[in-house]
Length: 152
Length: 152
DNA sequence: ATTGAAACTGCAACATT
DNA sequence: AATGTTGCAGTTTCAAT
Image (cartoon, rainbow over all chains, first blue to last red; front, side, top):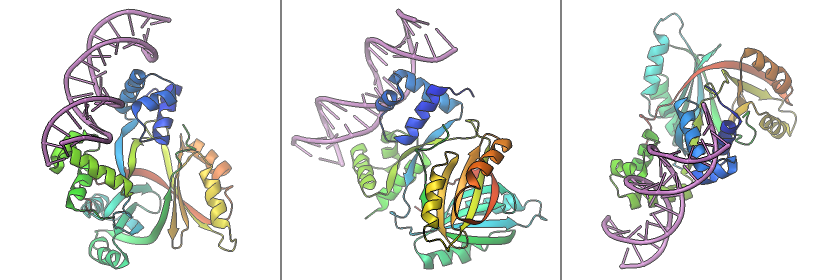
């Protein structure tokens, strides 16, 4: 899909000021509201903008623990990937799933109310996932995203 | 912050149908539009809802490669963390930064236009980051998020 | 919780460059 | 082919009740 400088300016503004009204975004990006609207529409259709998502702070909601788990799967089994992913998806506390090319096959992010709760989820719902060959875990401390310095 | 069942229902609906109009969300959550509005306002103030973000598909924008890099830092140096994070933040191609408790200290997600471009960024901007003791890299294939089965 | 008024948004038709 | 102008129905915001 064709994306020009104006589109990039709009995207940059959308990321920098996510809650701004469309009229304000148009002004910041230096286009009229109608033009902005048409371009956003095009970017949506072209798949560049997937949608607008509410960003939830799980910690504020009382889920104090987030753990990042890496898995290597049993490659011998032909359906290992599919079965593992399907099972992981069904665990409510798994809030993110990524697949990779490399030593590690899958990464899951898991949330829990506290460490005791995490242990519970870990034993009952993570270790029971099928086709795990190896895994390791890291406790997430903080996430930083830079909406200022992006390659747009 | 105090979050009741109605709040949770609203959050669930917001995650399940991010682009739905507020009026529709109100109906789905079984509250009036005014009530929905007040509750969303409260959840924002309480920090549970951080904001609404445009989700960008970097691949559709022409950034075909995304790599997840894990770093262990030189613990000897007292400012290693701060200096590493500051430097990482200044790299436009670094689109996500997370810090951990565990063997690995930091994870960066880096995007590039193609593999050649990635090699360039890797040599010029990643390997030059200060205080790296160890690192490993994984190429991201796909991200799956489950808005259906969340612990709400 | 309901009503209502003002502001804003999504979308379309048409003229303009 | 993309932009700006205008217009309007529908939605959101927010205060009064």
